[in-house]
Length: 371
Image (cartoon, rainbow, N blue to C red; front, side, top):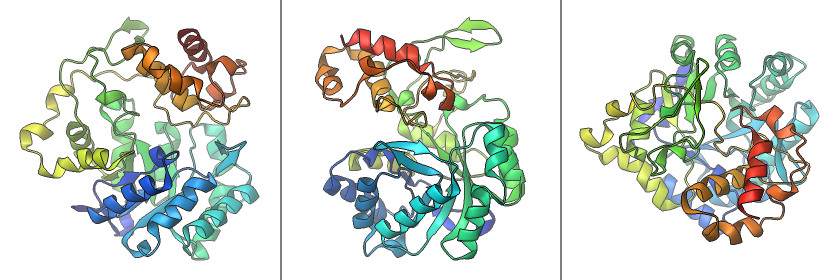
């Protein structure tokens, strides 16, 4: 495993690391096996995103006796409501979840404490104050509970402000082929280098959307300058090419693919043994010359849902049904505790979605497909 410097911290992180979100609902022994496989293969940076107690307890088991091998992160502002992931700006609640994380992981500190999921200006203005979560994060760092302060977001505007603030050590931001032409992306990456902010690239496969086999990646149309066009993929997209594109971007310290199984982990790590031809992504750039909003990447930042619908999983089933039809997926859909038919159209999810997904209409579509 090759390492890179995590910005001005000087710490060395594995260039390919691991996001753990896809281990949320996996059996404990399975999730532990994936974490141990990652450690055994030289991965030393792990983003632990969710606040649910089960996944935190599982991570505690996975890192027991191996804490010194890993840089572990958590998110200040991530919480749980009715069993679902949620976001809070209440300092007391946010701090309680960090202390819960430390207890369940059996550790005295985290390596990076991220200010969680900030995309709107009013949220940024509230977050980045001494009375807000930034003040809380700085106090935790000074008390030895965190080594570095991070910021996670999906929009260039707030992320750029965080990078230029001088108080953020690490930025976590989506970097992938679909966002190749996102306005302002180059300026953001350049700012990370100039400010010495370590850049953690998340969503490397755009929630798996990039790795699907269909020629037309998006069922919906692109909106570009008021004209509608349809993106058609002319070349094969592989995990190796996705990671090669990201690792060539200036300022990237590490990329955190979410891997549900050891086989998926090995598909990512095949990058290290890949030939130059297998890594070559140049032919893909023309395919991804546009920037798309409105496509779900299943991140569940839209939660909590008042009907307790797992929106990300529902969206994943909808997109899969477009490829295979609903029949092979019906049992999985019907086994959900709440599904698209339970949606009341309140729109709370849409107000929280960082990617502009029209969740309510897609819930209606899903309910119709599986009815």
